[in-house]
Length: 149
Image 1 (cartoon, rainbow, N blue to C red):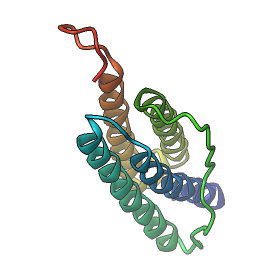
Image 2 (tube, one colour):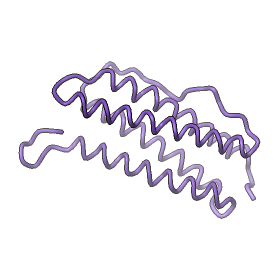
Image 3 (cartoon, rainbow, N blue to C red):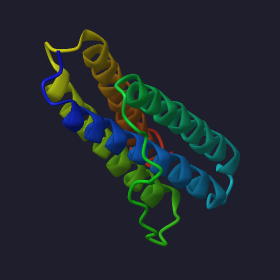
Image 4 (cartoon, rainbow, N blue to C red):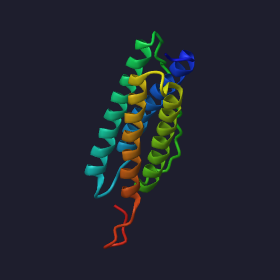
């Protein structure tokens, strides 16, 4: 049994808002990519936007299952006006790490109290950790050429 349902709902709404911000952020990033690597990077960014939408909908479904009301807010959107691929990827890592923190917060609230929410939080943490590691790999220099990407 969940002890503090309102804190769980607030955390899930925070996740929903963050994931919706991810949709906007990744679509915006995809529009700002230029250069010879544009096509694969744009595809990756738009795939991330689609995945963020899926994550937002899943958080919303969990909110309504608990009798809550999904937020219409969108999480923090900061326009840095830095649109180089490297800077965009650094911002993406920061965004994904914020998601990991929210999912850890949810896990702490539901651990040993709600198996379904606990498993959801764990799977999302694992998913977001993979995203961070993939982005970090994209930021590394190639051992053969010394170039990023």
